[in-house]
Image (cartoon, rainbow, N blue to C red; front, side):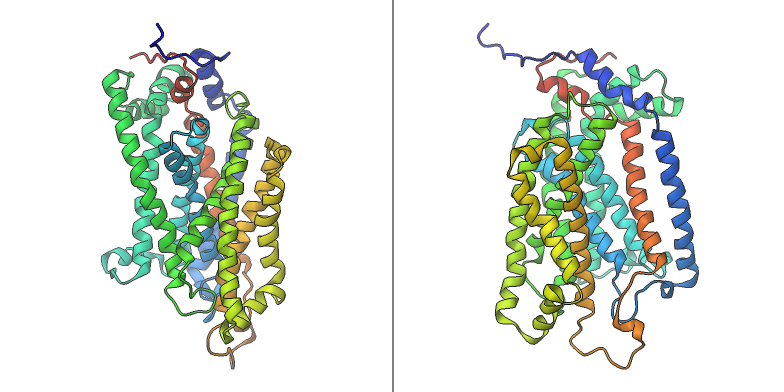
Length: 446
């Protein structure tokens, strides 16, 4: 008897776990209204994109000098947030950190939504999106853009698999338990569950595939943001001409992704009534993780500005002065203080790692992460090596047009719609993994 593993003490049963996690999927008041709102926003902003498509990129604020504007800043931000799937599900999963079990699927949903729309944002930035396939058909290996398209597509594919495969046991439960589901959804659950009934052989093979994907996605996840950083660093422009952009972007991605996950955790916990599963422990641990990645990111920020600031070459001098106390100072210092330094100071204190305070702090961190990408892209393009002269006034400055802002809102609404739909049709907290982590016997009927 002493050789048998001890079950963890819990007030939960397998039936209660199933009921708690599946209930919001069939009975969630207001979710349909939220989906209608998002579709309305997408439709209205889609009209703005139609105008851009019809009249060309001249309707945006982008000109000869700032040819990468709001869209590319948004693209880098979306790629950054998507890295949370690799951080939580893979790195911490491979380390067998057990507290991530209730939130790992939320992280993967966020990853899939953001990386899918990140690829779309590139298309939205193109004046001739009908030629997008030429990137693959006539792509050159020397082009960092081809590398970016390749790693984004690969990361999206592996992230989708890493979302679906661990969900197979839960989908087998959904097939039986969600009696009110539509015939289409029942068929979907039947197809995706692959006849899983939790036999020892099935359990072994499934976990082997999942661990293989967890290992595989780590280099892919690192590559996606490293290659994105190379789109900037492989130039001689002041502000981008640095060798640390690869790890610097990866560190910043962990910050943005962790903040996005904490915000999602809070809203799922409250709206789906999952307090028994997404507990204060998860928020406390995520708060500590956010402090850790913020400290690493702070280190890279010091490197990014201290080294060129010490040497103060002519181009760097103009660029840094504009950031520190020039036209971009408010946005720059807001992103540094509100998005990094102050959150570190607050989250060291345990009382700020409670659900509501840490969610509010994460909102500032996520907003700071977005503004940081904007500051990375725009000021550097406004500081070319040769002076900007003998051009119209609107070439000297960059302000996003109403069309650009609307298309950017479209991309955010699309991300939220994907997350909402995925959380509506799939359990956001793993049923079987949660039961197993609490030592509860799992039974899946054929």
